[in-house]
Length: 261
Image (tube, rainbow, N blue to C red; front, side, top):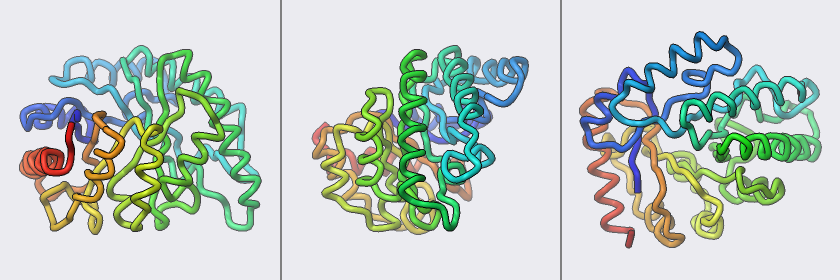
């Protein structure tokens, strides 16, 4: 596996020193699709001088730009994702994480069936554009306290399959998966679709090793479909520099115990 931390370039030096392979910034932080070329270039320069690469960014769509509901501005979405992918290509980003709970959440009283159609339409719109810029978007199932749609690995896999494009794939986040007690069997069954992963403890979303949390089942499931891709710590820390050192040790230990690769 390749190990990373979700953070900005200001912490990339500490991440590199701790032995990680990459850092994972955000679409808003690096690509700035709603800001000027000048602002994007400033952020890009920070990435260029970082001691480790930033091949993946998260927080794809801002909450102000709705994907479901009666206020969807599809033309605005097209413009936004096109700009994001154009800049991703320039920045060397190959993966964008589609969590975006605020943007995709179904408004109260709105038809869930229609919302699902909107999610599929959104995926079918952006996937070919992503492909044109050599970017893969990975859909992140969130826990039920954070969103009201796409809250299980199985549901995420269903959306990816319905869109049916190689540049739209799935992410599994150990925190969301473990917090809600999501299905181990669905995780394994969806393994061929999973192209990125996140991790944090199930209770307080801390770094692995910062509080008691058994990741054995998670890593065992990942091993069953021979996952050898990236895994990023995404969560809270009380002492970032110290806790990320412990976190990579814990992740590698679980991988050694539970994984064959």
